[in-house]
Image (cartoon, rainbow, N blue to C red; front, side):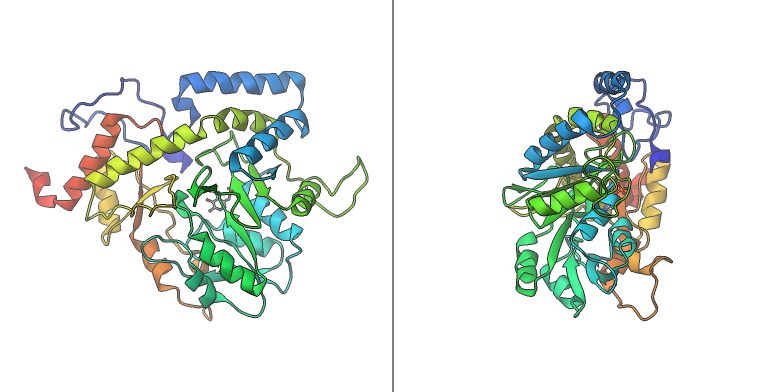
Length: 395
Ligand SMILES: *Cc1c(COP(=O)(O)O)cnc(C)c1O
């Protein structure tokens, strides 16, 4: 994904009609990172310089301050900074005592890390299908994937849209299952007025650079209301050490870097504005695009979408992507292979999950990022509209 990013074009943002000579414009990228915002860059570089001058790289003030800010933002008692979203998932599963012989239900259409974390603790992922409209796990799909060894379920707020958690939590309560939110794509979203990250036993966040809250490298966090669980994750991320050179349990090196914490603290203050900009861009795209390609449905009241990705669907997905490319509009596929069909997990005896399999062939992610200009929005819309009406393209 990173290779598709380009620097901000050096012409000013405009509202010109896209017809007025787009041929010489650089392509609209799928996303943009912090180097597209000179004001933000200056602030972030100063914060990084400050940490470097103090040589305060490991844990300490900066990490504690970010953890306090992030816990308060997520409206949850505890946040623990870790080295990636994958480690957040791994450490939660370990802290819950899950391992060999245990099974964990995960949606088949997620980034591979959701399943990988389960494998990394020697437990086994059980893949569930998803709802065709929302592309998310539902209680019915969890129920269909249940088995005697299932101990936990990891709903994924995929693309930034909130999973309908209440029915899943209710099912889990009745069967003594732990519920872990994979919130790696949904920082700041709300479900029934509560923040993502506060909805289940614990939640895992990734701050990979392109996520809605992104660091300058790999970083992640665990949020939870369970003080014991937070404490175990804290021990595990740093060799089970407390105090220095006393190792209470075998852990690992999976701390959040202080440099990343400094970057994240500054960006957290802007996250609500970034998410609101994404929602507004999505509303403009949705209003102008469709029915082919089909824009994502709007979430119902009480649910939310922060548009980590704006994912349209199209039966002729590859033709759509070629057309977008010819129009100078980048696109992506999240994800081209459902996890249970990837070589790492393919199992001929495994279940067929028709919706996840179908989605992997029809989904297409369009550009969306808070610094998108009116001209860029217009170019994306025009590219989609000319695909829907191919005859108009030739006039
Ligand atoms: C990004 C992501 C992860 C993994 O996060 P890393 O920080 O890259 O390890 C896990 N789950 C989902 C849904 C993601 O999008």
